[in-house]
Length: 93
Image (tube, helix red, strand yellow):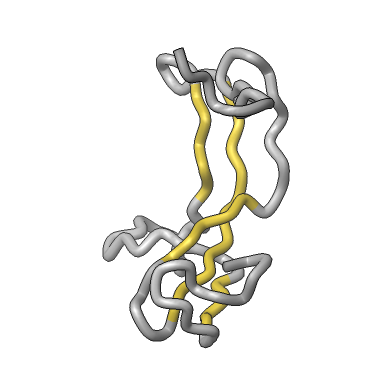
């Protein structure tokens, strides 16, 4: 939706852009505003890793939502690994 401006589910072109996807916790603690959601990438005990802020595109007609990272996360080979589809035609044995 981000690049096409069209919902892939119903083909509607009326979309909402949500710049800051926030935590909808009814008890946010002592903060006056909700915390922005982040894609959190952590180790076993959450002691290492990284995170990235999210933005969203939502279809006004069917409600389909796509989330996108606002910045690129570093590929460290441990918590974040790059995957690529193999090149060439599909293997047929």
